[in-house]
Amino acid sequence: MCFSNTNLNLYRSFVAVYETRSIHKAANLLTITHSAVGKNIRELAHQIGKPLFITSKLGTEPTSDSIEMYQRIKYALALIKNSEESINDFNEQSFGLIRLGCPSHFTSFVFKDYFCQFNKKYPNIRLEFFSSSNNESISLLEKKNIDFIIDTPTIINEYNFETIKLLSLNNVFFVSNTFLKQRNLNTKISKEELSQLPFVIQKRHLRSLSAELKIQFNPIAETVSAESVHSLVLCNMGIGYCIENLIDNNLVSKIEIKDVALKKVDLIFAYNNNLLNKASKAFLDGLREYCKNLVYNDL
Image (tube, rainbow, N blue to C red; front, top):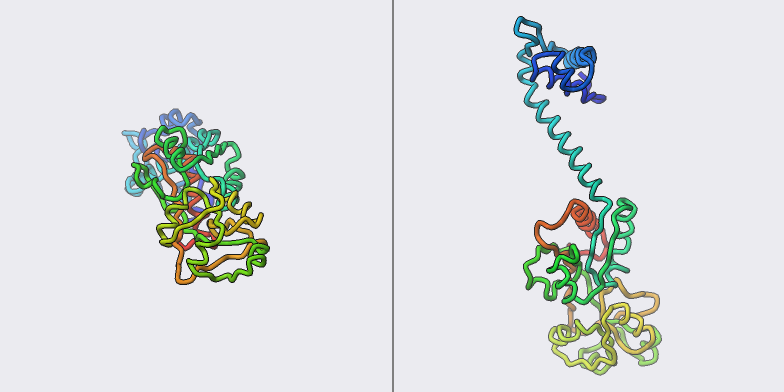
């Protein structure tokens, strides 16, 4: 027996004849000719190598082999039908909208390639990005004005959202190469030396970093975005702090702090339970797979 080119219509005819006990009734049920049903049954019997039905006074009766086959074939056809319906359901939703709360530096640098991949695969699904503050994104998610958030778990864990860890990233201190030469800095300094340098940082990181390193910073600039930190550091304003994959290693130098191992930052995917449609689930599944392949991910 060879099933490499199996025709599902043979099995649909088999199930219809089995259930109706009639070639003619099966033909009416399948809306095909009775000769087509008969041909399908003969071809399937030849393919299997055993007779499937016998004609009796009661009608078309199944053989013992058919009785054994019926439930398995019925179940297999049901699985195929469910799969087809699932695909059709997804295609209907593929002309939809995914609303994503995500800081702009993650959108532009960490996940940019994935967003492009997703758009290429599902060109009819529109992606709408909200680069709001952490609190604003949480408020939007609570009100169901966005579908999910990608961000650090700073305060997200205080809310009743479902969360999935996507990545762990390194934070670094860095200065422009020009600033390094002007200040005659070493690329490895003490916490005391760090506290004396002009500091450029995102507002939301200042308090937690001070607590982590147990030093008081005197920032010369506090920004709302990591891109701003990077830009101001390139203007030789001072030493910056952000995720490592954001910086341009050709233009800046990383600064190591003696006896300090900076904590990694987790990125999480947060959403309201049971509110992800199939398009959003496809987005999440693809995103998790993408994150597994990023070189700076240590999951």
